[in-house]
Image (tube, rainbow, N blue to C red; front, side, top):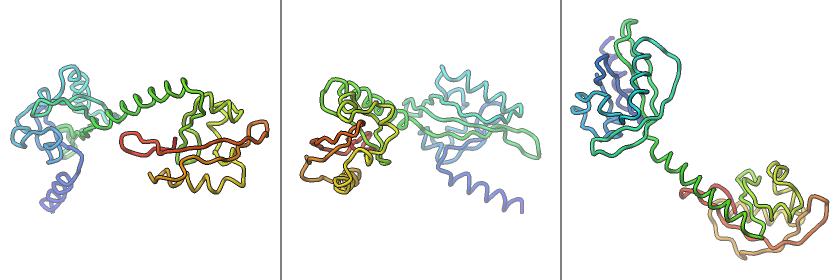
Length: 239
């Protein structure tokens, strides 16, 4: 039964897509899974003989060793830590690290660490922020009303010209679905075009005239065009 349990645990350990390792008190890995080898680029045999001191960027090492020592002492308070790891080829990547005491027979014999490569996630966040900054600059500099509308049909961001056209402040517009701004007789075609834009379809004609209900109840005619709003290759709304 013990052997069967060990086999099941090893199977789970190896099949996990997250990097896993058990670190001994001497800060050397006792065991690692294939996912960790792929994240770090290390052959398994080399990784098992490499102390964690050599895997972590020197600026992040003190924080990692502090958490390691606490876990080895039995501390189980949940935490996630971002740290930079040096791959076998010298590339520096950013990981999300969590850990817990590794127990055998009720005794702490090491630390079980879970590692995810979040380098691409952070790069995407940076691109999103850069896009948002550029978009804000464009938004502020044009007299045309601009808004990015999310899948829930609420404006995610808008410029002052858009607020002026519809006669409502930004804070109030952010809480409104655009359904409430469009004349009921024009809403069906707007929703149909919006849903098609949201999945990346080209919709013709590119410009249509619709009626908008301003904040004071006044009815005005607008020229409306829209396109998918893409960040990091993913459609996140309609501009």
